[in-house]
Length: 288
Length: 261
Image 1: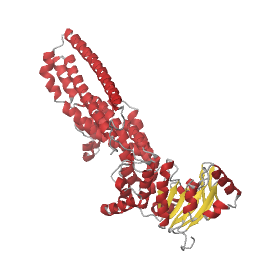
Image 2: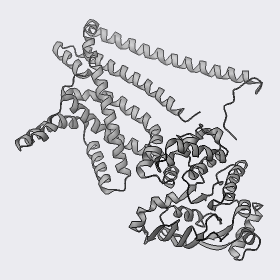
Image 3: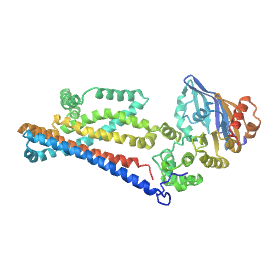
Image 4: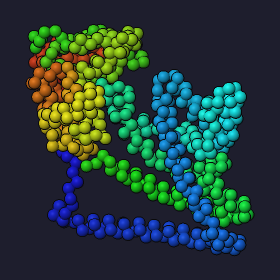
């Protein structure tokens, strides 16, 4: 008995036309539904715009200065992409540590997760940006200039470090759940074939766990794009930093914050769309 | 069939505790090369646990296992240190077929079969593929070599699992209720493959509820209950004149339910 996708034809079912009509009707109903929601969005946007114009909001200023903020989009995306990649590596090792029976691995992993999740991201950002250089200076004074250099990071490096460390801790749970979602039988089958733990992980478990993990990592990436605004505090020239700089200079807060907010919003919408496409593609990965 | 020289599997006084549950109560067994041993018994009798101890998917609490010269010993709930180092060697001597198939869903039929030879044994890919195709032809799945398991039936998946285990060229094949998860109409194709293996002289230990298969293919049938081997003998003897009252009772119930052909 094989699972087949035999093409439907009027010969196989004389009532096929009925089914097709029903499917078409359901699809049309869904489209109309979506269109209605779209109209509500447009109305809300129109109301917001009208309200802002009442408040002597200056569209001209926005159009003249938007491109200055726009140039920060690349930095925001770059910082987020690099950070999510490093965070994923940290999360993988964090999860392996949590699932390990080795007390040292378990201890390091649970300590890392506890400290990061127990403190605000803002404090972590300040610690890395302001605290690390201080440690570096003390090391220099003690006569370890090379070691001191390690603690002296550029703004972008600091930003990436803070976001990676923070998200890595939160994403550990995602990776742990992904690894555990792979059935016990897969571990046993791999072990029975004589695989070492590392071979098992790399060849059998991770490729299956990734399917569970990817959608959640996508969500984290979307969230991180907004949290990356915090690294503006370190002087990274990304969206928020640039918007803030102009806003203060010309006292145009609403205008510039709106530009920044809109850019984040568009980034989110695009990322969500990309993510849903990726998820659909992965759902089909084992077929055919 | 005890004529093939020295036993290839030698189990001595094997015990297994799960918490306070004494599942295996001192099992000793010898299996000879090319012998087919079928273990029957009701669920909970410890037969699956026994099989899983043979390749250390379960660690025995105490006792000694020897397969083709690889010795593993446990005492006081732990494998002896030098035995732990040999765990993988022991596993390489055995091939296991599971009740739930456990094929790798992210790999095609062919990839399932070549994976372990390439990764574990370092066999060159072309050589592994050639061997895998030969095995897939044997289990009747050569035409499905590029298909992912999601598109296959349970019987086909189980036959992949058999080919996958054989690809590692084990000395002993372990079958843990290989047909229990299958729809009735798919059981035959798996049993047919197993029968072919038996006829080719594969050493096999089979845990099953398929009494017809046991009767026809086994060299020796063992009835297990309460963590001990109650009775063993040639299938004709076990099925027609069992000596132990527990075996008789078990078989009577099987006949009642119409499962003994």
